[in-house]
Amino acid sequence: MTGRTVAERVARLRTDFDASFAEPARLLDGETVELLAVGAGGRPYALRLDQASGVHPDRPVTALPTTLKALLGVAGFAGVVVPVYDLAALLGHPIAQRPRWLVLTSGTPALALAFHELDHHLRVPVTDLVDGAGSGGYLRGMVRLPDGNRPIIDVPATRALVHQLAGHPLGREEPA
Image (cartoon, rainbow, N blue to C red; front, top):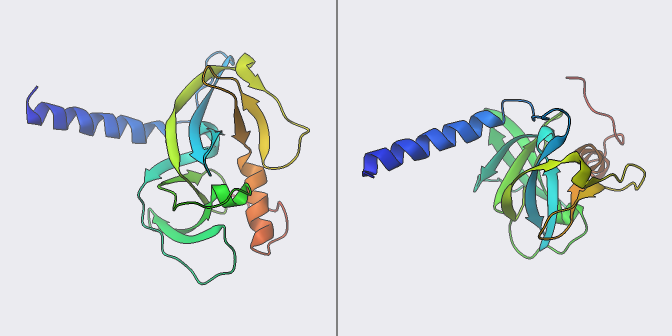
């Protein structure tokens, strides 16, 4: 392969990857769900792809003067300034290092969650999900995988926690 061919292939893969976030998460015949396998605070988690609108590595985050350990600062996304919260801190894990990855969550107001590792994209059968609908907290069930189970982050519950930390009424989202 020539350098030009490799560069073209990488550009096409990047474009396809970015475009996949513009499409709704696919449920194939209602029997699979798409997830991102991530790591935060040295622990494995999963995020529902339909609760994310983009994943960004090494995005600059401008720190703010704050007493909230979880608030890393703000970052710009398509001309919009978005607060960035450390997922490990929100989940109660010690913060060992600055997270590399940001996931821009779906919903309003805009919110980005920072995490340490992006392990891989998953498309799993619904039967591999264990529902945790009544468990409360910021996790909602788990996904069974060959390399171990991963708790699933409940983005709406995490957004409610952020609202509470920021002094907003718990669970109230602005209309879209």
